[in-house]
Image (cartoon, rainbow, N blue to C red; front, side, top):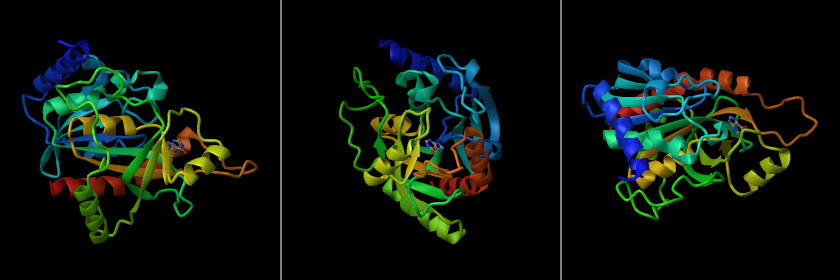
Length: 275
Ligand code: HPA
C-alpha cells in the first residue's frame, strides 16, 4: 500500500475507534481565532492532535490543536480546532492529511473558515465573506503520484465552492440578519504579510481577501469529491499606504477573529441544520 494512504488509514482508524465507530456527516476546519464553534459542539470526543498518528502539531497562534467529534445543529460533525499551515514548515501532504482522514471517516460536506486580510476596499474589519472562488498561490497539494483511491488526476475546479451551499448561506444570512459579503480568497504561503505592491497586484487580479491557508484543504476535499463551503472573517484591511501607522499584527488578527466568531458560528450552525 502507498505509504501516504497507510498514514491516512491509520489516523482514520485511530479516530474511528475513539468516536465509537460513528460516521461524521460534516467536517469543519476552524481557522485563527475561530475555535469557538468547537465549544458549541456537544462533544463526544476531544482528541488532541498530538495523540492522533501522523497528525502534525498545531503551532500557529489562535489554534487550539483539537480534533472534536460530536453533535452540532442536530448533526454528527467533526471539527479541527486549529489547522496546519504550509508556513509552519509542514509539507503539503501533512497540511492536508486531516482532510483525507475526514473523507475516510465519511464526511459528506466540508466547512472551512479562516481569518483573512480584506483587499476589497468596501470591506471592513469584522466582515464575514462567503468564499465563492479562490486564487491559489501556494504549492498545489495534489502534486505527486495521484491518490487514485480518493479522486482523479485532474480534478475540475469550476465550482470549488458549492453553489447550493452558497445560495443557502446567503438566504439564511438575510433571514437572521447577519450581513455577509461574497468574494474571492487568495491563498499565499505567508508567513509575511503582503507588501503594498502585492496588495495592489492581488486587487488587480481580482482577489477580495488574502490569507495563508484554506486553499490546500479545499483542493484536497474537491479531489475527494466533497462539497465545500468556505468563509473568511476579515480581521484586518490590507494597506497600500507605506507611511500608515496601521501595521499588520498576528495578535490583532486573532482578536478580530474572536470578535466575529459568534456571527460565523451562528451561520455555520444554521447552514449545517439544513443539510
Ligand atoms: N494577509 C495574509 N493573511 C492574513 C491576513 C493578511 O492580511 N490577515 C489574516 N490572515
